[in-house]
Length: 324
Length: 190
Image (cartoon, rainbow over all chains, first blue to last red; front, side, top):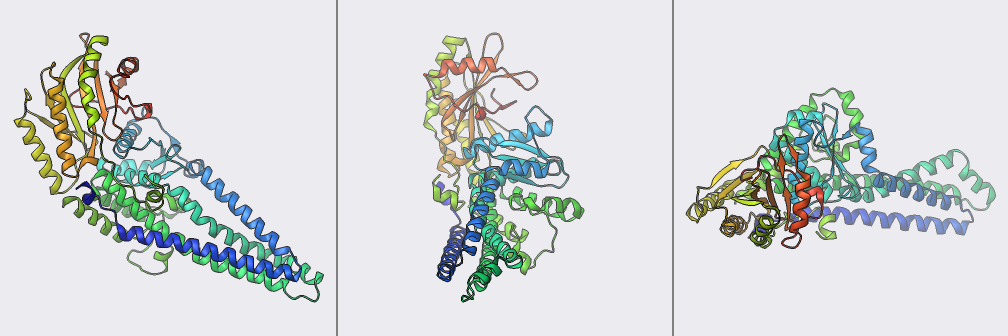
């Protein structure tokens, strides 16, 4: 009986699975394309672009690993948040109490708890595993939300931790990073004569210049596709965190009203503060830029979070499920 | 939770473990013999009420079931500042078994209604002749217990908690992760 009440959203899972599969497919196609270009190139006798690809891959792996391994520290530094203990203030005690209870309900180890001193109401969770995770709420969030709404937002963030979203999104974005680096390297080597050297060494072979161009083109295409897929994946992860969070607290409506409050407030906040927070967007509860609602255009394809309407509609479904 | 569940963001609410609760009576005997801590006869179940009619109906059934039961006083219902509901049962102080049976009735009703994941903890109160208070808290999702001894002004009597942990090791499973021994200040039934 319990199973029917907490049924998983098969459609969402399927769409997420397909997105990941496509990302993997793009990755395989990318590697194959580069391999093809490289072998073609070696027949021509120039090793310039092979080194380029290896360097791009190494830097990509390095930066992905760094952002994965130090995600908690990077996010805390960037948001100016401070770790708090229950004795620090009444707000900290309340935050700890809420997190304690959510952890006991969800059977998770307790993450560290931080408060960021900004008035923008938001929250984020990072950390490579649930043991070193940090859950951070801004002062604005603590000031503005009711206890039930705050609990809903924190449950959403705890679901991100449980779903290991930092790891999933790091692996997903690795492909984009490598493709972008490759494009940039190919462009510079073209500008500063890497391609020219290839040409002068092998006068009879006009392959070197096109090889660099082909690598660049492949990079651009892969970057564009993987960018869209990563954003799509991010939106699905948000929806599934909404869903798990709402099921954990049993109050989807509180999460919905928190969402409305947070996004409503966000549109009224000065833009400078918001821009400062943009690099962290992927891990925030609600994205920190104001944009018009109801557009199904480019902006909705590019955004890290689903539209408010979509999120509210999904939460309403959970609510119906619970009353059945 | 499996690898695939994590990757696909498919966490399910965790089902509670109910049977370990029956270790309480023997633990109560140990506490009484070793540390002179008497059961108060009061105990409570804490759960998260969900929205919607389904949960309200089950909650009402549970309350009626308990009122018909063997308790000495009517069942009290209260909600705390975190939005959790507490059902408090009272028995005489030597009837820990009756108390545990009542608490278990609440659990199994909620579980049968499909709301097992909403159970947070259960608490049974103890008191020493000198007036020290102790709550034994059962964590449903872990199937473990931990002692919680409040002092005035939101401080905890950690020394007493550690002592209790030492004595109870044989009778029941004490939660090994101290990070999960969360304080339940002003819990009903304490």
